View 1 (tube, rainbow, N blue to C red):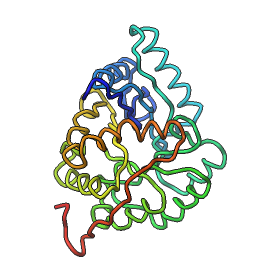
View 2 (tube, one colour):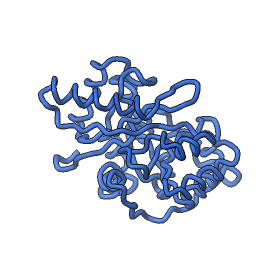
View 3 (cartoon, rainbow, N blue to C red):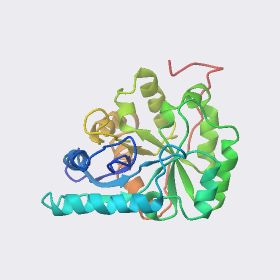
Length: 265
């Protein structure tokens, strides 16, 4: 990456001991160092929120943020990296209750943008109804890694309509570099070229298998949408989100479904 590009990672499982991310503070700090050396200057820590599996309340997340920021600032030569709160919320009807009760941890804890994760196998029945209710409350769902969702592979037009509703899409950097397989890579490329993903994040979980690296994904994106737009996905657009602003985005384009042509195989 160019030295002037200060990247923002909006989706990173970096808080130790809260989910399937790092289990120790040492690994979390190692991930922070890796991200910084890759050109990242801001990380939104987004632990999973999934009933019965990861019961991460806003208070727990904010406490984890405080501890990690203190660790990297106090004990590691003041690493100039800012860790902000967020969460990776598993899609369910309970999202509405979490919002209404003030429990949902949004990006930067601003109450504006929130990461929403569908099950990998499918998009739940009447998901659009819940998404509309979220949008109606003035919150904007960011649908995480749609390129890794089997239903988006089979029926991309349903996801396209969600973007038309006002949702945003976030692609994982490793999807674009092929580390989740060729089918995911091809779908990620198609969604990007159709302006159906707007943000790129690491979705990092570790220092080895799922590292917090964005630069390789940006380089892959440059070949698809050009350098300017690729860099916006890790700089201008996430910065606007952290400022609670609306994004100025290209219009989405529909993609072909499996009934006409299986372009992801």
